[in-house]
Image 1: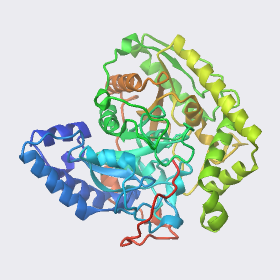
Image 2 (image 1 turned 180 degrees about the horizontal axis):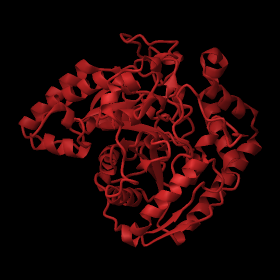
Image 3 (image 1 turned 30 degrees about the vertical axis):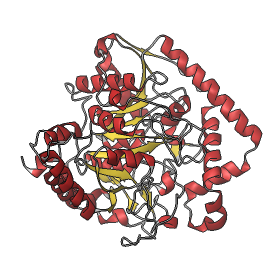
Image 4 (image 1 turned 45 degrees about the vertical axis):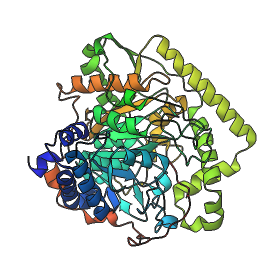
Length: 507
């Protein structure tokens, strides 16, 4: 098999072939490194790398296979870690000039679990500064371009991971999600992103440990790939008070689900989130095409109350707790998104905070009522087609100004407030021939069920060009777009060896 063909295989298939000795981890790593060299200049998805260590680990993984050892779930699979996660002896910048030379002396909990599952960490994947926003550009590494058009936004904050997966540079990549940071880039890049229920994956660096809006989770080119990674991430850890004991093997494969038995509710805008007219029309066409797959598919009205204000408050308080020192000591080194969130939080009162948590509870309880009559809720993952990465965010729709730099992401952060698990599933293209993401939302704590349903939908969608996952043109990406790095103002020192204790990050 050629290197070209090898990198296109799913992580599930690659892991199977490593176990049967059909391919070697060394061979796979070489193929991935070659693809990164060819394509990364065009999309700027992979940032700091540790190639020498990866080669040593690949050789060790190959030797373990030859010795007939029991192999863990991700054995020998090249992996990208989102640059908000601490990685031992590998540059971790959070996309911030404040940490452009930060090399941790430890792996955080999630990274340690992925490594223990046999993953070979090749490098980091790009993010917005501290993960704030859904445009993966920052003054350290520059911008990540969309694999379908590198001058457009790849989404964020897990944009580097999504672009690396879509271009077959790496078969395994991690992500995180507060207001849509797993789901938005997955939709924009034509891959799968899964926001798990809070507590499924331990988050040790959540500044407010009891606040559930921020989670870590998996991405992949298919739902089965997502499950494979997810099973290595889940489980209780003493650093996260929301985490709880789980049986990881229960999530390693998609649960069997009969699409024909599912009662599905759909919504175009989740009760008032900004959704552009062309996206509404695209969604309607796709709903019509997928209706025969389900037992029923009904439009529902979703009452999200004052979800925008609620999310504003909860998000701002989180930033207030996390960036107090950075704002007061290094405000000039922070980007506009971080400053805006912090200053909003600084203006809030305890009464605002109490109201927001009360409103989130009301939203949560109201949303669960839908599942008395339905098994799933679906809607557009993103209300807009990918826009130029030079545009930091979408400011208006239909001539009306949007509320905040993240208001255009309301289709996702409304769902965040419910705490229900949600998958962004590739679902054909939109009116501009860019990837369209379908958000599939399961029952409260129904992570296995919603992944199983998404997998069944994915298999059914393959038979319909209107619904099938789109693929980027790799040949075009071999011609790099140098402008992607034009906003870099604080390049990192790639030979830095500055070890510190835990540093703050955003999800």
